[in-house]
Image (tube, rainbow, N blue to C red; front, top):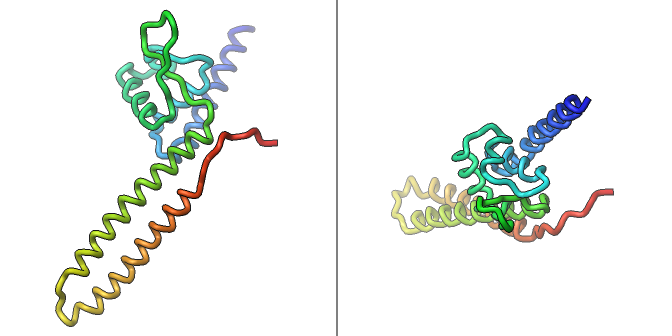
Length: 171
């Protein structure tokens, strides 16, 4: 009876990892990184690279690369435990705040980069000299370019207004 119960728990654990990983992929994580995060989140204590490797059936090198990315994104942290010489990692407990903060920052960074690139093109166009027959095309393109820059301003302003807080349980 115990083995059936363990198989059921393992089965459900794998289903949870599989399904929640799909959600995390929408936040820009690769499937492998999403599965690693969910595994760390579900685990009751911090995990070593060896434990991650065994749990997911992937190489320790793959786990190291994945966990480093998750640490860089602020989704996982390295922790210290007395008497343990290996590095330990755990997922942040506040899923909503962490993922939304990370997602918002990615949008802000991308929007800023694109806006700067479009503004540079606009500046080059303003300083260019054009033949008479090209001027109406240039004017049209500059108008569209201005709309695109405005679009990025709106995106930036919208994402700057979002302030994810600690999530609270839904009723």
